[in-house]
Length: 630
Ligand code: MSK
Image (tube, rainbow, N blue to C red; front, side, top):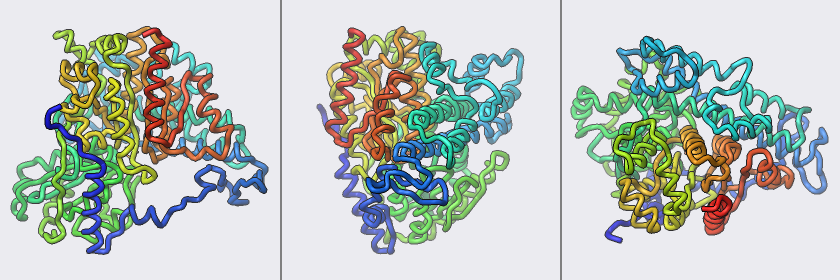
């Protein structure tokens, strides 16, 4: 097996404990302590049976009080809460997508935002029946940006991207009445349905939850992904490194955190500027290191090879190193704790978006028109802060792994098709991948996604499940903090092929890929929907027949529920390792874990036991193989 060794979660925990010792010296708080203060959690909240939608309550359902003041029962309350949770996630992802469309609208040849993948822009324009012949690429970009933003409030019809799905899937959506209309409408409709005195029927609430999720995955998120590629380049395999050891003690360390690549791309651009590097040197540093946390990190890792410092529950750790000059955030998944924590160190906590404003931060408003100046001033401020470091507090753990990232659908097709066909381009097919699956060399695929959650030992479920799956010849495509968990552990190192079963190992060797393929950020789960659609079309099967499942073992955010809903609605069975607050209603739970199968040929499974969760996914994949006779 050679010398290859994964970094274990125990090793990562030991590092965190060492960093918390530094924190204790300066009186820093940390999520590990706040979790203790917050547990045990409220049972009503956990079961989803607390309603505070109107001011007659809050009402809580118990055996003695089976209905709220308005008469709503547990099923209506749980269903409403689930739908509102979904709407929050769909709104968040979709608004991110809208910002990307807005950035595309501001793209110009003289920068700072340019069209880096004009071929992809033209491909999408043709898909949308937009004339491209003889058109200036920037005129086309602006026209497409306006059309894309129009999808958020379109008066009639459904999302344009739905046509990418196989015909059968589109028919299921139409029949089940879950094809999303305007993106904003599905969020508004969810809020309207759940207002006091509206829907309390579980079936209708679950149906709208799927539709609202669909407006995210096949609407806003897809726009975010596709137009990010147009602006910043479609990811291709690229080498990087992951874990806290990517920070460099002698350098100015800037950590980018959040989701929107518009900010982080500019920070990376200017951190590389010789003028800025000289400025850092004039402040006593040797250079500038940019690294990332959460999905912003995924975005710049897969396009620029920027190293990944950590995932969601490591965001405080980067400050605790004492070597972070600035943590620069855009939107989503940012702990408000970073404000007070940064005050215990020299770190500047810089917020940049009106969507995400926090106390104890320096707010530098980041806008498309002024992006270059904004980025420069942030990099400059970080350099100037180097001299404020307290050397006695600096501890950067010596831990990192190599990772190959950047497997967009285009890259996967090109890489795998390229093994059998040297002439392949972006128009290649998924047939080589299908052949690996039908022959049984690869048994199937799992889309591993989602966050960390203190309810699970950080990264434990991601890593142990991935290890088990690849040992069983199941390839993993990963995104979000799951992808970062894999990269930190070493599962995106090509040497991790040694941990695979014989079939997957052979494929990894032939195609020169790691067994866990990095597919990007949270919005990039839309890439997985496109890949599943292409696999279905190329095989002549329905998506639900493919030996493919989804898994979010440590999920925590509203966005994750929205994602789960569109993955299930696309026909992919989805496994959760954290309970989605629906146990208070057997009817809502029943709809999600079985009832929706009649509409979309897939459903949720919730299993909190790690071993069982892995076994169930393998079982489901084998069942699907048996059902199609492979
Ligand atoms: S960042 S939503 S903690 S995956 Fe996309 Fe990670 Fe979950 Fe945020």
